[in-house]
Every structure is written in C-alpha cells, then in structure tokens.
Image 1: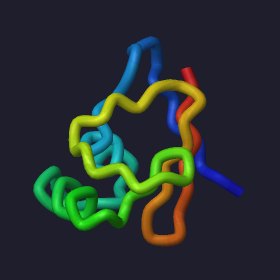
Image 2: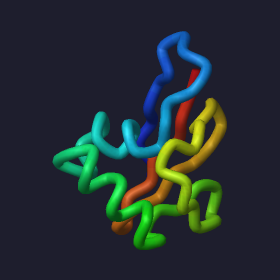
Image 3: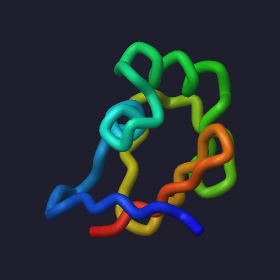
Length: 71
C-alpha cells in the first residue's frame, strides 16, 4: 500500500522538496542526486527534472517506496 502526501491547498510541490519533506532523503542535495541518477519514478516513468512540479493524482516511487499525492 502507498503512503499519501497532501498538498494542503498548494498547486504543486517540486519533486526534490517532496523527497525531503516525506523523509526519503536527508537533504535537498541528496534528493537532487537520486533524481539526477534516475532513481525516482513519477507515474512509473523515470523523472530526471529535480524541480518537476508534482501535482495531485501523481504517484512517486523511490527505493521500493511509493507515495500518492493528494490535494
């Protein structure tokens, strides 16, 4: 089962910030590095853009973990 992350009224969250906020990465630099290395999937596709805007309804996967973003 996937975790859920609420945008709490925001339109989006940058991908590197999401990884940091949910605790998958200890720092923004680490988050940017794992994205750059092709280790993060958005909706099942490798995402290389560190500041990719993640919106409600998208699923982010990294290191065997999944999170679904909600409004």
